[in-house]
Image (spheres, rainbow, N blue to C red):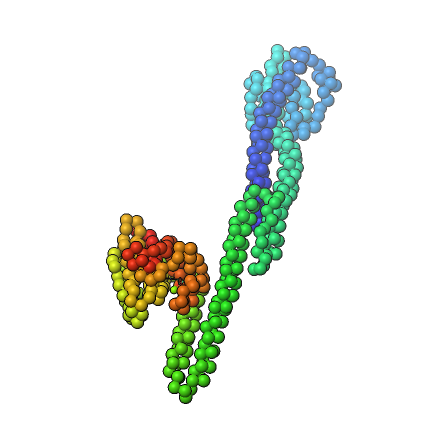
Length: 436
Ligand SMILES: Nc1ncnc2c1ncn2[C@@H]1O[C@H](COP(=O)(O)OP(=O)(O)OP(=O)(O)O)[C@@H](O)[C@H]1O
Ligand SMILES: [Mg+2]
Protein backbone atom coordinates (compact mmCIF):
# COMPACT_ATOMS: atom_id res chain seq x y z
CA UNK A 1 0.00 0.00 0.00
CA UNK A 2 1.34 3.47 -0.85
CA UNK A 3 2.23 5.95 1.93
CA UNK A 4 -0.62 8.16 0.77
CA UNK A 5 -3.23 5.37 1.00
CA UNK A 6 -1.85 4.21 4.31
CA UNK A 7 -2.10 7.70 5.79
CA UNK A 8 -5.59 8.15 4.34
CA UNK A 9 -6.69 4.82 5.77
CA UNK A 10 -5.37 5.37 9.29
CA UNK A 11 -6.32 9.04 9.62
CA UNK A 12 -9.83 8.56 8.21
CA UNK A 13 -10.37 5.41 10.32
CA UNK A 14 -9.36 7.35 13.43
CA UNK A 15 -11.60 10.27 12.53
CA UNK A 16 -14.53 7.93 11.77
CA UNK A 17 -14.21 6.20 15.14
CA UNK A 18 -14.00 9.62 16.82
CA UNK A 19 -17.08 10.76 14.86
CA UNK A 20 -19.01 7.63 15.82
CA UNK A 21 -18.21 8.24 19.51
CA UNK A 22 -19.36 11.84 19.07
CA UNK A 23 -22.70 10.77 17.50
CA UNK A 24 -23.27 8.18 20.25
CA UNK A 25 -22.58 10.75 22.97
CA UNK A 26 -24.87 13.20 21.19
CA UNK A 27 -27.64 10.57 21.14
CA UNK A 28 -27.29 9.76 24.84
CA UNK A 29 -27.30 13.45 25.85
CA UNK A 30 -30.25 14.20 23.57
CA UNK A 31 -32.22 11.29 25.00
CA UNK A 32 -31.72 12.48 28.56
CA UNK A 33 -32.54 16.11 27.70
CA UNK A 34 -35.63 15.18 25.65
CA UNK A 35 -36.92 12.96 28.51
CA UNK A 36 -36.80 15.97 30.86
CA UNK A 37 -38.49 18.27 28.33
CA UNK A 38 -41.25 15.77 27.48
CA UNK A 39 -41.90 14.97 31.16
CA UNK A 40 -42.36 18.71 31.83
CA UNK A 41 -44.62 18.99 28.81
CA UNK A 42 -46.81 16.07 29.96
CA UNK A 43 -47.31 17.46 33.45
CA UNK A 44 -48.06 20.94 32.00
CA UNK A 45 -50.75 19.44 29.72
CA UNK A 46 -52.34 17.65 32.67
CA UNK A 47 -52.34 20.78 34.84
CA UNK A 48 -53.68 22.96 32.00
CA UNK A 49 -57.05 21.18 32.16
CA UNK A 50 -59.41 23.22 34.39
CA UNK A 51 -61.12 21.23 37.20
CA UNK A 52 -64.56 21.81 35.67
CA UNK A 53 -64.77 21.83 31.92
CA UNK A 54 -67.38 21.12 29.37
CA UNK A 55 -66.58 18.37 26.95
CA UNK A 56 -67.64 20.39 23.96
CA UNK A 57 -65.31 23.32 24.95
CA UNK A 58 -62.36 20.99 25.08
CA UNK A 59 -63.21 19.29 21.79
CA UNK A 60 -63.51 22.71 20.17
CA UNK A 61 -60.17 24.02 21.41
CA UNK A 62 -58.34 20.67 20.89
CA UNK A 63 -59.98 18.73 18.11
CA UNK A 64 -59.07 15.02 17.98
CA UNK A 65 -55.79 14.20 16.19
CA UNK A 66 -54.30 11.23 14.39
CA UNK A 67 -51.51 9.55 16.35
CA UNK A 68 -48.10 9.83 14.62
CA UNK A 69 -45.80 7.82 16.92
CA UNK A 70 -44.45 10.41 19.34
CA UNK A 71 -47.48 12.56 20.26
CA UNK A 72 -48.60 13.12 23.85
CA UNK A 73 -52.01 11.49 24.26
CA UNK A 74 -54.47 13.20 26.59
CA UNK A 75 -57.36 11.20 28.02
CA UNK A 76 -59.94 12.27 30.64
CA UNK A 77 -62.29 10.00 32.60
CA UNK A 78 -65.23 11.30 34.66
CA UNK A 79 -66.26 10.38 38.16
CA UNK A 80 -68.03 7.25 36.86
CA UNK A 81 -64.81 6.11 35.12
CA UNK A 82 -66.34 6.84 31.77
CA UNK A 83 -63.89 8.16 29.14
CA UNK A 84 -65.16 11.64 28.47
CA UNK A 85 -62.30 12.95 26.23
CA UNK A 86 -59.43 11.53 24.14
CA UNK A 87 -57.07 13.66 22.04
CA UNK A 88 -56.23 10.66 19.78
CA UNK A 89 -59.33 8.49 19.38
CA UNK A 90 -57.28 5.97 17.35
CA UNK A 91 -55.13 5.09 20.41
CA UNK A 92 -57.28 4.32 23.42
CA UNK A 93 -55.06 3.48 26.37
CA UNK A 94 -56.78 1.92 29.39
CA UNK A 95 -57.30 3.98 32.52
CA UNK A 96 -54.36 3.65 34.92
CA UNK A 97 -54.76 4.89 38.46
CA UNK A 98 -51.32 5.72 39.97
CA UNK A 99 -51.05 9.53 40.21
CA UNK A 100 -47.86 11.26 39.05
CA UNK A 101 -45.26 9.75 36.67
CA UNK A 102 -45.08 6.04 35.91
CA UNK A 103 -44.03 3.66 33.14
CA UNK A 104 -46.35 0.91 31.88
CA UNK A 105 -46.38 -1.75 29.17
CA UNK A 106 -49.35 -1.77 26.87
CA UNK A 107 -49.76 -3.81 23.69
CA UNK A 108 -46.09 -4.74 23.59
CA UNK A 109 -44.71 -1.21 23.88
CA UNK A 110 -43.66 0.94 26.79
CA UNK A 111 -45.42 4.13 27.72
CA UNK A 112 -44.62 7.00 30.05
CA UNK A 113 -47.68 8.24 31.95
CA UNK A 114 -48.56 11.30 34.00
CA UNK A 115 -51.82 11.04 35.93
CA UNK A 116 -53.60 13.82 37.76
CA UNK A 117 -56.71 13.19 39.85
CA UNK A 118 -59.21 15.96 40.52
CA UNK A 119 -62.50 15.76 42.44
CA UNK A 120 -64.45 15.13 39.29
CA UNK A 121 -61.94 13.63 36.78
CA UNK A 122 -58.87 11.55 36.15
CA UNK A 123 -56.52 13.18 33.61
CA UNK A 124 -53.99 10.86 31.94
CA UNK A 125 -51.24 12.06 29.62
CA UNK A 126 -49.27 9.31 27.86
CA UNK A 127 -46.30 9.21 25.49
CA UNK A 128 -44.65 6.21 23.83
CA UNK A 129 -41.07 5.67 25.05
CA UNK A 130 -39.96 4.22 21.70
CA UNK A 131 -41.34 7.37 20.06
CA UNK A 132 -39.09 9.42 22.36
CA UNK A 133 -36.07 7.26 21.45
CA UNK A 134 -36.79 7.70 17.76
CA UNK A 135 -36.68 11.47 18.14
CA UNK A 136 -33.26 11.24 19.88
CA UNK A 137 -31.98 8.94 17.11
CA UNK A 138 -33.21 11.38 14.47
CA UNK A 139 -31.36 14.25 16.20
CA UNK A 140 -28.13 12.27 16.40
CA UNK A 141 -28.37 11.19 12.75
CA UNK A 142 -28.85 14.78 11.72
CA UNK A 143 -25.50 15.69 13.33
CA UNK A 144 -23.92 12.96 11.13
CA UNK A 145 -24.23 15.11 8.01
CA UNK A 146 -21.67 17.81 9.04
CA UNK A 147 -19.41 15.00 10.24
CA UNK A 148 -19.50 13.29 6.84
CA UNK A 149 -18.74 16.60 5.11
CA UNK A 150 -15.83 17.10 7.53
CA UNK A 151 -14.47 13.61 6.75
CA UNK A 152 -14.69 14.26 3.02
CA UNK A 153 -12.83 17.57 3.30
CA UNK A 154 -10.18 15.96 5.56
CA UNK A 155 -9.72 13.11 3.07
CA UNK A 156 -9.18 15.55 0.22
CA UNK A 157 -6.78 17.64 2.31
CA UNK A 158 -4.72 14.61 3.36
CA UNK A 159 -4.63 13.33 -0.23
CA UNK A 160 -3.43 16.68 -1.50
CA UNK A 161 -0.90 17.42 1.27
CA UNK A 162 0.68 13.95 1.16
CA UNK A 163 0.91 14.23 -2.61
CA UNK A 164 2.77 17.54 -2.33
CA UNK A 165 5.03 16.11 0.39
CA UNK A 166 5.90 13.09 -1.74
CA UNK A 167 6.72 15.18 -4.77
CA UNK A 168 10.24 15.68 -3.44
CA UNK A 169 10.67 11.89 -3.37
CA UNK A 170 9.61 11.71 -7.01
CA UNK A 171 12.06 14.51 -7.83
CA UNK A 172 14.79 12.63 -5.96
CA UNK A 173 14.20 9.44 -7.92
CA UNK A 174 14.20 11.42 -11.16
CA UNK A 175 17.55 12.93 -10.17
CA UNK A 176 18.89 9.48 -9.32
CA UNK A 177 17.77 8.13 -12.64
CA UNK A 178 19.92 10.74 -14.38
CA UNK A 179 23.07 9.42 -12.66
CA UNK A 180 25.44 7.27 -14.72
CA UNK A 181 28.81 5.71 -13.76
CA UNK A 182 30.63 8.71 -15.26
CA UNK A 183 28.14 11.26 -13.91
CA UNK A 184 27.74 10.64 -10.20
CA UNK A 185 27.50 14.29 -9.06
CA UNK A 186 25.72 15.49 -5.90
CA UNK A 187 21.95 15.38 -5.68
CA UNK A 188 20.08 18.69 -5.35
CA UNK A 189 18.79 18.96 -1.78
CA UNK A 190 17.38 22.50 -1.65
CA UNK A 191 13.63 22.88 -0.84
CA UNK A 192 13.52 19.31 0.42
CA UNK A 193 11.49 18.38 3.50
CA UNK A 194 13.54 17.62 6.62
CA UNK A 195 12.49 13.93 6.46
CA UNK A 196 14.03 13.42 3.02
CA UNK A 197 17.26 15.37 3.56
CA UNK A 198 19.02 12.54 5.49
CA UNK A 199 18.15 10.13 2.68
CA UNK A 200 19.59 12.52 0.09
CA UNK A 201 22.71 12.97 2.22
CA UNK A 202 23.16 9.21 2.61
CA UNK A 203 22.70 8.72 -1.13
CA UNK A 204 25.19 11.51 -1.80
CA UNK A 205 27.78 9.85 0.43
CA UNK A 206 27.18 6.55 -1.35
CA UNK A 207 27.49 8.19 -4.77
CA UNK A 208 30.68 9.90 -3.68
CA UNK A 209 32.16 6.62 -2.44
CA UNK A 210 31.11 4.92 -5.65
CA UNK A 211 32.71 7.61 -7.73
CA UNK A 212 35.96 7.40 -5.73
CA UNK A 213 35.96 3.60 -6.09
CA UNK A 214 35.27 3.84 -9.81
CA UNK A 215 38.02 6.44 -10.26
CA UNK A 216 40.40 4.20 -8.30
CA UNK A 217 39.57 1.24 -10.48
CA UNK A 218 40.01 3.21 -13.66
CA UNK A 219 43.36 4.50 -12.44
CA UNK A 220 44.40 1.00 -11.40
CA UNK A 221 43.59 -0.45 -14.79
CA UNK A 222 45.45 2.39 -16.54
CA UNK A 223 48.47 2.00 -14.24
CA UNK A 224 48.43 -1.77 -14.55
CA UNK A 225 48.43 -1.70 -18.33
CA UNK A 226 51.19 0.89 -18.26
CA UNK A 227 53.23 -1.23 -15.82
CA UNK A 228 52.73 -4.33 -17.94
CA UNK A 229 53.94 -2.61 -21.07
CA UNK A 230 57.61 -2.39 -19.95
CA UNK A 231 58.14 -6.05 -18.94
CA UNK A 232 56.30 -7.23 -22.06
CA UNK A 233 58.51 -5.06 -24.26
CA UNK A 234 61.56 -6.36 -22.39
CA UNK A 235 60.37 -9.95 -22.94
CA UNK A 236 60.07 -9.25 -26.65
CA UNK A 237 63.62 -7.92 -26.84
CA UNK A 238 64.90 -10.83 -24.78
CA UNK A 239 63.24 -13.33 -27.11
CA UNK A 240 64.91 -11.62 -30.08
CA UNK A 241 68.24 -11.76 -28.23
CA UNK A 242 67.77 -15.51 -27.65
CA UNK A 243 67.05 -15.88 -31.37
CA UNK A 244 70.14 -13.91 -32.33
CA UNK A 245 72.33 -15.78 -29.86
CA UNK A 246 71.52 -19.18 -31.37
CA UNK A 247 74.77 -20.81 -32.43
CA UNK A 248 76.89 -18.01 -30.97
CA UNK A 249 77.59 -19.75 -27.66
CA UNK A 250 75.72 -17.06 -25.68
CA UNK A 251 72.40 -18.96 -25.72
CA UNK A 252 72.55 -19.94 -22.05
CA UNK A 253 73.08 -16.32 -20.96
CA UNK A 254 70.28 -15.01 -23.19
CA UNK A 255 67.91 -17.75 -22.01
CA UNK A 256 68.69 -16.96 -18.36
CA UNK A 257 67.79 -13.31 -19.01
CA UNK A 258 64.56 -14.37 -20.70
CA UNK A 259 63.68 -16.65 -17.78
CA UNK A 260 64.28 -13.82 -15.32
CA UNK A 261 62.09 -11.55 -17.45
CA UNK A 262 59.25 -14.12 -17.51
CA UNK A 263 59.57 -14.55 -13.74
CA UNK A 264 59.38 -10.79 -13.13
CA UNK A 265 56.34 -10.46 -15.41
CA UNK A 266 54.52 -13.34 -13.77
CA UNK A 267 55.33 -11.86 -10.34
CA UNK A 268 53.87 -8.55 -11.48
CA UNK A 269 50.73 -10.33 -12.69
CA UNK A 270 50.44 -12.20 -9.41
CA UNK A 271 50.71 -8.98 -7.42
CA UNK A 272 48.14 -7.30 -9.71
CA UNK A 273 45.73 -10.18 -9.21
CA UNK A 274 46.26 -9.97 -5.47
CA UNK A 275 45.43 -6.26 -5.43
CA UNK A 276 42.25 -6.73 -7.42
CA UNK A 277 41.19 -9.73 -5.29
CA UNK A 278 41.72 -7.77 -2.11
CA UNK A 279 39.61 -4.96 -3.49
CA UNK A 280 36.64 -7.08 -4.44
CA UNK A 281 34.64 -7.28 -1.25
CA UNK A 282 33.00 -10.52 -2.35
CA UNK A 283 36.23 -12.42 -1.85
CA UNK A 284 36.87 -11.19 1.67
CA UNK A 285 37.89 -14.31 3.53
CA UNK A 286 36.20 -15.41 6.71
CA UNK A 287 38.06 -14.14 9.74
CA UNK A 288 38.90 -16.72 12.39
CA UNK A 289 41.25 -16.81 15.42
CA UNK A 290 44.79 -17.58 14.24
CA UNK A 291 48.23 -18.02 15.78
CA UNK A 292 50.28 -15.28 14.14
CA UNK A 293 53.62 -16.76 15.28
CA UNK A 294 52.89 -19.99 13.43
CA UNK A 295 52.21 -18.15 10.19
CA UNK A 296 55.38 -16.08 10.69
CA UNK A 297 57.41 -19.25 11.21
CA UNK A 298 55.99 -20.88 8.06
CA UNK A 299 56.65 -17.84 5.87
CA UNK A 300 60.17 -17.41 7.24
CA UNK A 301 60.98 -21.07 6.56
CA UNK A 302 59.57 -20.70 3.03
CA UNK A 303 61.81 -17.72 2.34
CA UNK A 304 65.05 -19.17 3.78
CA UNK A 305 66.19 -20.61 0.40
CA UNK A 306 65.69 -17.19 -1.22
CA UNK A 307 67.59 -15.51 1.66
CA UNK A 308 70.39 -18.06 1.36
CA UNK A 309 70.60 -17.38 -2.35
CA UNK A 310 70.98 -13.68 -1.58
CA UNK A 311 73.41 -14.48 1.28
CA UNK A 312 71.13 -12.92 3.88
CA UNK A 313 70.91 -14.23 7.39
CA UNK A 314 67.14 -14.55 7.88
CA UNK A 315 66.03 -15.58 11.35
CA UNK A 316 63.52 -15.10 14.11
CA UNK A 317 64.38 -12.93 17.08
CA UNK A 318 61.40 -13.74 19.30
CA UNK A 319 58.08 -15.38 18.44
CA UNK A 320 55.50 -14.96 21.24
CA UNK A 321 52.34 -17.02 20.99
CA UNK A 322 49.18 -14.99 20.68
CA UNK A 323 45.97 -15.21 18.71
CA UNK A 324 44.69 -12.63 16.27
CA UNK A 325 41.44 -12.66 14.33
CA UNK A 326 42.00 -12.81 10.60
CA UNK A 327 42.39 -14.66 7.35
CA UNK A 328 45.30 -17.09 7.20
CA UNK A 329 45.74 -16.61 3.47
CA UNK A 330 45.87 -12.81 3.75
CA UNK A 331 48.26 -12.87 6.72
CA UNK A 332 50.59 -15.17 4.76
CA UNK A 333 50.60 -12.60 1.96
CA UNK A 334 51.28 -9.72 4.37
CA UNK A 335 54.23 -11.51 5.99
CA UNK A 336 55.60 -12.77 2.69
CA UNK A 337 55.64 -9.28 1.19
CA UNK A 338 57.33 -7.70 4.22
CA UNK A 339 59.99 -10.40 4.61
CA UNK A 340 60.48 -10.52 0.83
CA UNK A 341 61.17 -6.76 0.82
CA UNK A 342 63.64 -7.03 3.69
CA UNK A 343 65.54 -9.87 2.02
CA UNK A 344 65.41 -8.28 -1.42
CA UNK A 345 66.52 -4.76 -0.49
CA UNK A 346 69.21 -5.76 2.00
CA UNK A 347 72.62 -6.08 0.41
CA UNK A 348 74.34 -9.45 0.40
CA UNK A 349 75.77 -10.49 3.76
CA UNK A 350 73.10 -8.59 5.66
CA UNK A 351 70.60 -9.72 8.26
CA UNK A 352 66.81 -9.85 8.58
CA UNK A 353 65.05 -10.51 11.88
CA UNK A 354 61.39 -11.39 12.40
CA UNK A 355 59.88 -10.70 15.82
CA UNK A 356 56.45 -11.20 17.33
CA UNK A 357 55.83 -9.60 20.69
CA UNK A 358 52.61 -10.31 22.56
CA UNK A 359 51.73 -7.22 24.58
CA UNK A 360 48.90 -6.37 26.97
CA UNK A 361 46.30 -5.37 24.34
CA UNK A 362 47.98 -6.08 21.03
CA UNK A 363 50.42 -8.23 19.16
CA UNK A 364 53.36 -6.55 17.50
CA UNK A 365 54.98 -7.96 14.38
CA UNK A 366 58.36 -6.46 13.48
CA UNK A 367 60.62 -7.15 10.52
CA UNK A 368 63.99 -5.49 10.77
CA UNK A 369 66.79 -5.54 8.26
CA UNK A 370 70.30 -4.21 7.89
CA UNK A 371 69.59 -2.71 4.47
CA UNK A 372 69.48 0.93 3.36
CA UNK A 373 66.03 1.59 4.86
CA UNK A 374 63.54 4.04 3.41
CA UNK A 375 64.11 7.79 3.86
CA UNK A 376 61.41 9.31 6.20
CA UNK A 377 60.07 11.47 3.35
CA UNK A 378 59.18 8.37 1.35
CA UNK A 379 57.77 6.20 4.14
CA UNK A 380 54.18 7.24 3.32
CA UNK A 381 54.51 7.13 -0.45
CA UNK A 382 55.88 3.58 -0.64
CA UNK A 383 52.39 2.40 0.29
CA UNK A 384 51.04 3.83 -2.98
CA UNK A 385 50.54 1.36 -5.76
CA UNK A 386 53.43 1.07 -8.24
CA UNK A 387 55.63 3.35 -6.18
CA UNK A 388 59.25 2.27 -6.01
CA UNK A 389 62.14 4.13 -4.42
CA UNK A 390 64.94 5.11 -6.74
CA UNK A 391 67.38 2.41 -5.75
CA UNK A 392 69.53 0.36 -8.08
CA UNK A 393 68.13 -3.03 -7.08
CA UNK A 394 64.49 -1.91 -7.48
CA UNK A 395 63.16 -4.79 -9.53
CA UNK A 396 59.76 -5.19 -7.91
CA UNK A 397 56.36 -4.14 -9.14
CA UNK A 398 55.77 -1.55 -6.42
CA UNK A 399 52.63 -3.32 -5.21
CA UNK A 400 53.92 -5.24 -2.17
CA UNK A 401 53.44 -2.55 0.46
CA UNK A 402 50.09 -1.48 -1.02
CA UNK A 403 48.95 -5.08 -0.54
CA UNK A 404 50.38 -5.12 3.00
CA UNK A 405 48.47 -1.96 3.85
CA UNK A 406 45.23 -3.31 2.42
CA UNK A 407 45.53 -6.58 4.36
CA UNK A 408 46.33 -4.64 7.54
CA UNK A 409 43.21 -2.51 7.03
CA UNK A 410 41.09 -5.64 6.59
CA UNK A 411 42.43 -6.80 9.97
CA UNK A 412 42.12 -3.38 11.63
CA UNK A 413 45.86 -3.48 12.13
CA UNK A 414 48.26 -0.57 11.83
CA UNK A 415 51.41 -0.62 9.65
CA UNK A 416 54.37 1.63 10.39
CA UNK A 417 57.77 2.02 8.76
CA UNK A 418 60.73 3.27 10.74
CA UNK A 419 64.41 2.76 11.31
CA UNK A 420 65.64 -0.45 12.89
CA UNK A 421 67.51 0.37 16.11
CA UNK A 422 69.88 -2.57 16.13
CA UNK A 423 70.23 -3.51 12.44
CA UNK A 424 70.09 0.14 11.24
CA UNK A 425 67.96 -0.71 8.18
CA UNK A 426 64.19 -0.63 7.78
CA UNK A 427 61.85 -1.67 10.56
CA UNK A 428 58.36 -2.58 9.34
CA UNK A 429 55.90 -2.94 12.23
CA UNK A 430 52.31 -4.18 12.17
CA UNK A 431 50.21 -3.83 15.32
CA UNK A 432 47.35 -6.34 15.52
CA UNK A 433 44.49 -6.35 17.98
CA UNK A 434 44.63 -9.35 20.29
CA UNK A 435 41.82 -11.85 19.87
CA UNK A 436 39.65 -11.93 23.00
N1 LIG B 1 63.04 -3.38 3.51
C1 LIG B 1 63.24 -2.40 2.61
N2 LIG B 1 64.38 -1.73 2.55
C2 LIG B 1 64.57 -0.75 1.65
N3 LIG B 1 63.62 -0.36 0.78
C3 LIG B 1 62.46 -0.97 0.80
C4 LIG B 1 62.19 -2.02 1.69
N4 LIG B 1 60.93 -2.43 1.50
C5 LIG B 1 60.44 -1.68 0.49
N5 LIG B 1 61.33 -0.81 0.08
C6 LIG B 1 61.17 0.18 -1.00
O1 LIG B 1 59.77 0.44 -1.12
C7 LIG B 1 59.36 0.22 -2.46
C8 LIG B 1 57.99 -0.31 -2.46
O2 LIG B 1 57.96 -1.61 -1.95
P1 LIG B 1 56.86 -2.63 -2.40
O3 LIG B 1 57.02 -3.86 -1.65
O4 LIG B 1 55.58 -1.92 -2.31
O5 LIG B 1 57.12 -2.85 -3.91
P2 LIG B 1 58.24 -3.73 -4.62
O6 LIG B 1 58.99 -4.46 -3.60
O7 LIG B 1 58.97 -2.81 -5.49
O8 LIG B 1 57.39 -4.68 -5.50
P3 LIG B 1 56.65 -6.04 -5.08
O9 LIG B 1 56.71 -6.11 -3.62
O10 LIG B 1 55.28 -5.88 -5.61
O11 LIG B 1 57.39 -7.09 -5.74
C9 LIG B 1 60.36 -0.73 -3.04
O12 LIG B 1 60.45 -0.54 -4.41
C10 LIG B 1 61.63 -0.36 -2.31
O13 LIG B 1 62.29 0.70 -3.01
MG1 LIG C 1 57.97 -5.70 -2.22
